[in-house]
Image (tube, one colour):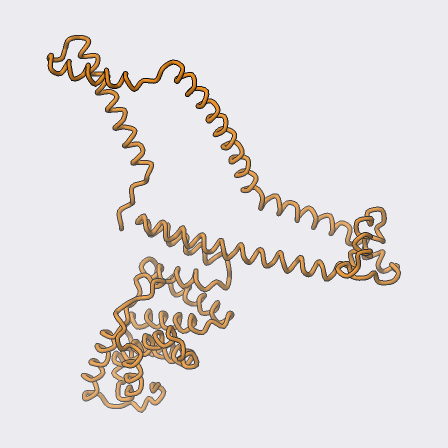
Length: 377
């Protein structure tokens, strides 16, 4: 764990302590000088220092003027802090007040709904012009409090306006969700920078619970889960696959499949290597149409590198000619790296691709082809 950074408050307290210590030393020396406890040389130095300090002392007129200025400044600062506290209280309670207001309107409408529908069944006359297109309908809305029938007519004319209001509220709620997710992620990285990885992971997990289809939060949380809880990583990767599929984010879906294949590869048994191979083949299939994108090409290079390694573990290497060639092309000149979102994840680059190619070369003369044409990419 990294060491915690010292807060600026600690430095302020240190400075205050040093000033108090200096004042204490000066007071002790002055007292000792008056009591004759200092040598003549030190007594002269202390007296000189005190004379210099007295020369900078303000006169009584200046003291009154400074006190007057301090009073004005104190009043202004007090008023500013009072306004800040009031604004902070109002701002922090605004979401709850808005919720209470909407709940109150909803309760009022639901209590009136049976009566309005009964009036509609008995007949309300001709349809009123849409409120967005007619100023008279808007005027009738302002004057509709005297009659339930008039309120029902105006409400029917407001269908399109209410649809737009609902859409605007939904968009505002979605924007707030995105901001809340980002806030949790930032808090997570703040905890991480202070060396508290457990709280960081809690914040990343909290971000995943805000939106059911958010990709970024699941991508980051799954990366942090690898060093904390690999069982939770599988769950997060599955949720990431669902979110990516629902939003048509093919690159993120391929990344999730590759990361899940890494987990199966670590189990080091034949059945799990087969599962890893199938996941990687699916990831490669998804990435093929995106080959013009640089990020997709790099991800395909990662997928092919891991695919060749898995096939080496299975000792099925005779049909890896094309995957090897493509892997070399996509990973050429790529430095070893892991994605920033994949904390503790595996590193990929040209060196790893060369190691995979060397493993294939070493195995090619020692195995017999299985006729597994499904392995070919």
